[in-house]
Length: 110
Length: 119
Image: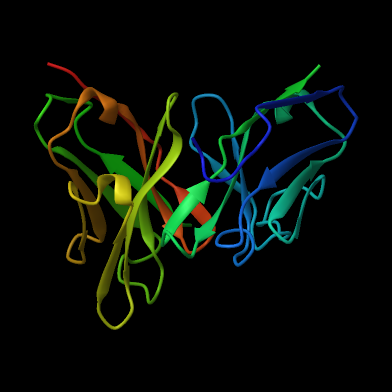
């Protein structure tokens, strides 16, 4: 059972937009930045968003992030079949002194 | 650019010690205040953070409560790498193990090592 809560799956058609939610508590998302990771099948997670809404170099602006209170959202616009992957949110939990992750959301591009 | 290269056995017997190493290129393990992490992933547990080491005037470690009694993460400045040791493993420790770099956000990851605990 993961500390952060994500929906198990989302789906949308190519070209459409999708959002993935991440819910936490006052000791993790309420205090610290959220990061988002994309994991393609058989590969390591890749940093997609950091510090709530910043994109590392090379990440297209189709990917966006936001945070409010103890919840965060990843948005993906102009969906492509190559976006089919598992997406994870992560942050630091100040009470546990741990990095914590969500359970992951499988994105299907129909 | 920064790269993390993992090495270590893919099969460990129950009750023995799991040992993995993460070699760093493009950065140094003693970079001030940059944490170096071990994380594992299994279908039953998802992504599970195990612990980290970092240097800030001296070396610090943080470990997950779930493995705190069994885990050691050690930096090796002479080889610019860090290691994971997990003692007294059981089949529940079977997972893909990753090393990673970063503070709140983990910006570089190793390639992953599938470790199976089985006799």
